[in-house]
Length: 342
Image 1 (tube, rainbow, N blue to C red):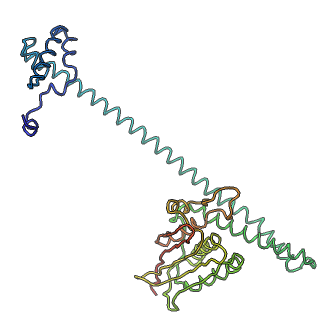
Image 2 (spheres, helix red, strand yellow):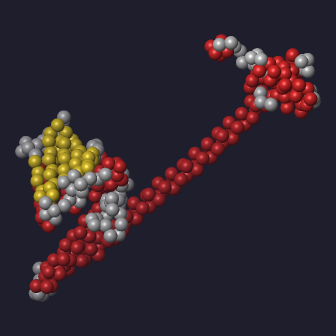
């Protein structure tokens, strides 16, 4: 019989029933000796090229009649169906239990994430008060309002000023990070000259770039369209990108920022010649508090939240932060901003 012909033949119910012979013996419808005779006959027929089922062998030898065989097969099929039904019920129950467990874990994780964000926000606010007192007295010292300073004292005050500015920036960043998603950021968009914003950021980081021996450059047309953005938050994002580009660069390196109008949006690109990022870790660097070198003796400072903050600001403006990088060659970070309708 060919394979196609075999597939077209009706399937005997007996094929679906395991251990038919044992079932007949247990019901005392067949002796163990008769079962062995039928099995031997079945093997003979198979070896002769005429394979048959056990039930056919039993009937051929006159050891059982067809009604009894059909009744036994039907009972076994019913038992199998019931076992399958119960198994499905248990599986559905297990799926429901597991789903409930996962939902509970998700709810707990959401609660913990909210507590974390609230803690960061509250701590940031609490830290602002003593920092404000420090800033006030440091400014008084710098202006010599409390008396003249010796050169060494003036130098020490300069170090204090630099440190409190860094601390203030970190506190602001942590407060910003307490917004647990881009949607949670409350934007106040308005028509903004991106050139002015970039000039502010460049001026703020010029000293840092000079100390790191990194050259800053920018390229954008004079007639660049106004952007519909939250200027304060976008300045924050650009500052994070520029800070990262300088920090993870090398002496004689370069950081270049460009902007172009394209397809109704303004395309922004920050490119550097720094240490770069391995391809398999591009997603990782967007996670908060993450640096590629996470050791306590890492070369580059910072809390590891710059790209996270920039990503959230850009996403809140309806765009996406795109990162392209090659280790030891540099990194290109780009995104687009909406043009103002005026």
